Amino acid sequence: MARQGGDEFILIIPDIERKEALEQLCERILSEINRPFSVQDHEILIGASMGIALAPQDAVNATDLLRFSDIALYKAKSSGRNGWVFYNADMAEQIVQRREMENSLRDAIRDAQFQLVYQPRYDMNAENVVAVEALLRWHHPELGLLMPDQFIPLAEETGLIIAISDWVLNAACRDAQHEMPGIAISVNISAVEFRTPGLVERVKEALATSGLAPERLELEVTENATLSSPEVSLEIMNSLKALGVRLLIDDFGTGYSSLSYLRTFPFDGIKLDKSFVAGMPHSDNANSIVENIIGLGKAFSLSITAEGVETPEQLAQLKMYQCDETQGYFMCRPLPLSRLKAQLREQGIAPGNDAAS
Image (cartoon, rainbow, N blue to C red; front, side, top):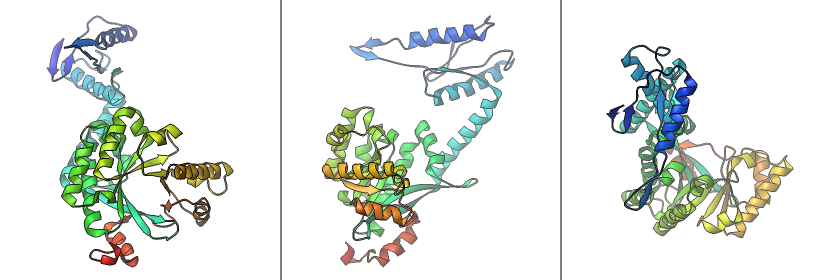
């Protein structure tokens, strides 16, 4: 055994002819590493990931064996850790592409390749814009315009999500303060970001730097983000509420919603998931779910926003169920800031317009 550097070690196992025997050895190694131990009366738990390259099947020289085992280790880590992965030839190309994308993400943060677009939320009765949701886009120099689902999972796995989220939060607060007087700005908080220490401080700093009034900032959090550690989640949310910001449950109905969940966490509003709205008005099941969620939200004095509204029939049905706000392509697609400002100007909302503030 030799230390490669940091927390990585190289283990050479000679005279093992069967793959099954090597897997049994991996199980024994993990079993020992996973054994808890105490340091100054504190129980410590650690894990390990292993990448394995075989000689002579994969390579015959030390340089290639080390490189291939490192590729397998990278795959093992990305698969959830505390396990092992054997190298195969297809893996190399996948890892190379993944590392290239990770490097591109770092370049994007450094070179300001991100852009925010904004999708308005409309008051159901007055039919005017009451808030906008900030949505992230990446102008990749080679791949073109990328949507969040094409890079956010990698950003979460690599830890780059915090730097990206900080950029989003600060840019959204700045735009709201200087370009959108009188309306709220909504920012999505990923599960990884929510569980990473320092969220409250980052929000506080973004508000202070931009000058945005806290009550105009809304943070959208999914149900699942809060359930891994309810006590810690409640503490974080209470601290955010103490700043004055509003908290919304995003994609409501897709997680583990319950009455106790709504009673426990200090949310201000519900964003009804678009998958339910999509079935309206022709699906009785979808209609019933939407009507009941709206009624449940109102019973807890929560504002209700329906996402993914794409037809006039859906809008009419939501109005009949007394939904508070709507958001979707039927009313307005996500817009770059310049086009959003033009739309707000038509509503009488523009920088320097006292009547709209």
